[in-house]
Image (cartoon, rainbow, N blue to C red; front, side, top):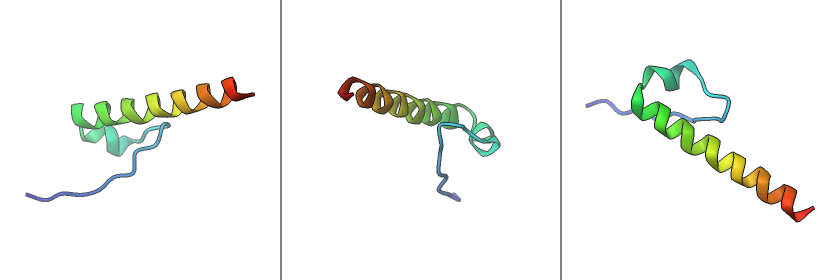
Length: 45
């Protein structure tokens, strides 16, 4: 089995889509984490 590491950004990429459901789930995690980080930064202001 061949494994590769991908860096998933909130903007996404075709590589993530090529991974299918697993890629989509991981992208959503990254997107959610970025949203929470921005939300917390806004609350601190």
